Amino acid sequence: MRITTRTYTMERDGISGFLAAPPGAGPRPGVLFIHHASGITAEIHLYAEDLARRGYAAFAVNMFHMLGAKGHDQHALGAQMQKDHEDAAFLRVIGEGWRFLLSQPGVDRSRTGAIGYCMGGRLAIPFAADTPALRAIVCNYPSIRDEQPSEHRPRLGFDTVKELKCATLVFWGGRDAISPPAMQLRVMAGLMGNGAPLEYHFYHDAAHGFFSPDGENHNADVAHRAWPITVDFLERYVDAPPAA
Image (cartoon, rainbow, N blue to C red; front, side, top):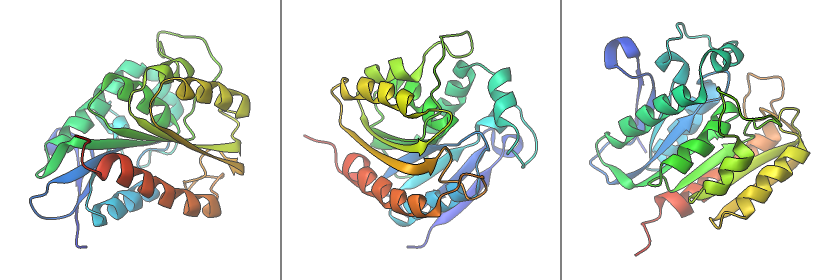
């Protein structure tokens, strides 16, 4: 399928991110990508374009640019941006990205989902809890730590998952040093108790960041297996018409 792509900038468009969508009037489902600590990297572009070829409108919101960061190389920005900005600021710009996605021609407001990676997977949880219209989220190795609530992070992932009403797909790695298996079990307990549809996959030989070919933990085999699972999940919980 032929698709159109465009990079948006704050200076020109008042929003920053990457949009991929098929042409035509729609209606079509929409998926918001919430990037990891390295920003919008190559694989996010590729996955957004793949979804566009499948009939979705996909928008990857550039949270760092939306919060004032400059330049295109964002690999080293994650830790400092999270230190400088509270989760509330990130959630605000995620919401702006979602509303921008909804404003695109042909996007069906009743069929939207989100895919988050690392810090984006963590932030997808409170975003989904606060956005009941969202039908599903995919959390790729969400960076949920064993920590106490703070001014920067007042809502912790292992508690907030209990509030989710949307379908959730989670990918974990057994070698994840940020959210090790003990924390993963704590998160899963909350997800299993919230009553919403849940699917999860655990890869014992994968580390945090296995999707990203630019990272030291890239695992091409696991990424190759995980993406079709993501597509299937979106087809069932986002692309499918709402239940009567």
